[in-house]
Length: 162
Image 1 (cartoon, rainbow, N blue to C red):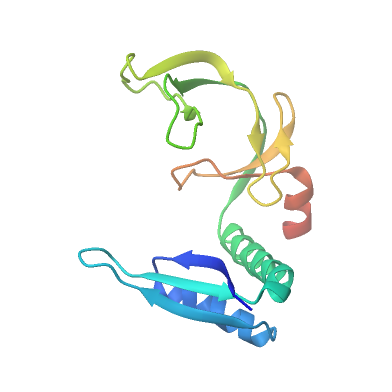
Image 2 (spheres, helix red, strand yellow):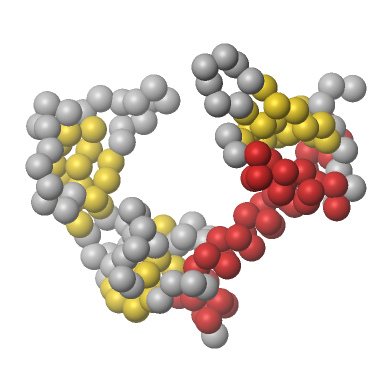
């Protein structure tokens, strides 16, 4: 039976950590490295088709634990979410999506982006991906020490920090 590609990483340590988790869970997998001349190697894990769901569950649980460990290193302040100005790409990317981001007043190319006043109208909890809408309270990492704002919904904050 053909094994199905499950994970591709550019970092050997990450691939090895995932392989260890799969091995501990008794999941059948193959691990290989693909090297193309002039490019960085890729570390591929293929999983037996009958073990794919369990492999996804193991991977999701490990990712959740890592994210929670990272979040516990941050300081948070509670505040209401409010609309923010947004830059929106005028052309879609290769995947067909129009890239957008919060506008902080920096210069931008009007031939590539459009400014949408108040267009950033919701945010997502870093852990559970719940939506946070204008006027709703949430916990935001303070000071912002990441490229993207990291925030938690009230439920995730209460679960992690009591």
